[in-house]
Image (cartoon, rainbow, N blue to C red):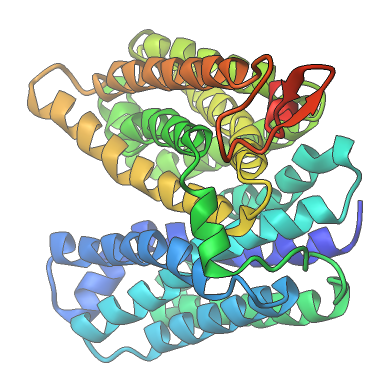
Amino acid sequence: MPLALLALAVGAFGIGTTEFVMMGLLPDVAADLGISIPSAGHLVSAYALGVVIGAPLLAALTARMPRRRVLIGLMVLFVVGNAVSAAAPGEHSLLLARFVSGLPHGAFFGVGAVVATSLVAPERKARSVSLMFLGLTVANVIGVPVATAMGQHLGWRATFLAVSAIGLLAIAALALLVPADHGHGELVGVRGELRALKSLPVWLALGTTVAGFGALFAAYSYITPMLTDAAGYAAGSVTLLLALFGVGATVGNLLGGRLADHHLRGTLFGGLASLVVVLALFPVLMRAQWSAAVAVLLLGTAAFVTGSPLQLMVMEKAAAAPSLASSANQAAFNLANAGGAFIGGLALSAGLGVTSPAPAGAVLAVLGLGVAGVALLVDRRRVVSGGVVAGSGGRVVAGQVLEDAAPAER
């Protein structure tokens, strides 16, 4: 695999660390700024809002720029946001800094995925995306625990300075390892990128992302009370168990990338079906500590098997202008985070039990399977005889219209 993928993975590691470390630092930040824990929780929401807004906006605004330059610029914005976070004097300035830190997140992964696939042969595209995402999953195993410990011993501001240093390392790696003539592609501009979002298959792929990863976050958002109240773990053991989730996510990510290069649709359907089973069994698995640990590992594996296939499917559905659609998929991940947590919270509020968010997530995963099934039917209907709907991008061979989207049915 090209060394340029290492540069993308370093950037992904920094982004993954800064996204999730705030959860572990909330008590320290709240105490230092003299605010409540719920108020400090808005810092998590501010970052997520930055991702949702920044992903499509920055991808569209930079559509005519060479992609290596875009990636470097996004990491510069990332470094600035985290450095300002470290120096923020109060709650409101920190909220703004966290919002700025989130802006480049989605666009980096979106544009980075386009660059990653341009660096390898067609039969290795999904694997290249999974290697970039490897930085994100490893961040949950190593980056977040180390950064959290650093914040608890040296102060939370030191954590964001360290994350800024990772961003600087990523900038240097991108400048040195990503070839200037790679990942450039056809610069179609804002209108071309927006036209790609008019495609129904693109929206169905994005809908699958929202439902599928909403299923994950419905359960994962409430994993701590499940482990302590249902499985009987001490609060101090949760950090180690969350690292176990990261191990599962890393395995699932690499496995999904390898399998998707052979059969993209099959990997997607298999991953979603596995997620349904794992989430449905969660209430049973949480009855003993050993099985609860297995459940956490399997949750990370099943969920992240679908990461690379979903990213690649969105890109293939918008093959003429993939940057915006690819970045929009990252916004969809964050919408899934917020929506899944909300639905899991509804199950808890209804008094269905501490493990009830997991079965609620299983319902969302079934919905994801349904949307993916509709997407498959739409693709098959778009292969027609004797003509094609305007704008479908097909080509006629011996009276048959062959769709550009057909590779996604591998």
